[in-house]
Image (cartoon, rainbow, N blue to C red; front, side, top):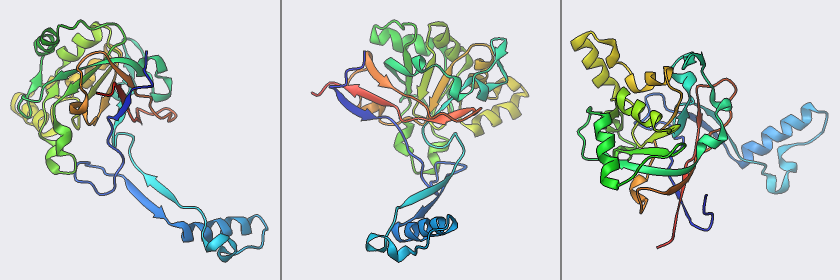
Length: 264
């Protein structure tokens, strides 16, 4: 049950232009109020209304923005369709098909901040963190992986300095009934360069996005680029809401996860 009398904590990173932590940063064009008056007047003239920008109160209209961005910019939820065309033998769900029931409820935080960059979190590591919390996962619980990488947001190191999930760790959580797994890192798997290095060294294609591709066998969603997990005063029993934006047939959707914590 979500306690709406509790303090909301924003766990998201927004869309930002020209940020060094995005390999494909959003492009945001801003239209101020005077530009808005000119554009609105032009639109009305096309509808046969004689009007100029100066006719608006104080000569100003409405401000707005035009955004060009991939669905994986900022905090977002990846769907099974992102991982492959099928999940568990059936057509993979896209973002508008994700059940809302998956996207809210109780969450727990598993702390991996001491792990080195480029390392891989194992199923045993997940078990160790749960044991330290004296916590058993319940069906539908949301698991949040804390790496501390969000502290690097705005820098190039955000793209490289974090541990990633393994396929076995991902499967461990899914088999426990978890449908949504979040991370405060740029990606759910190891950093791109580390995956590429391991593939080049071994020739083993299982080094490439193994945690993502676990979703081809077992259905789950992941939230990438979370923030502020360190601001949560508790590690289990966290009330969380994380509804994604509906985008037709999309592999991901932007999301603004909000946790609710009691005032202390």
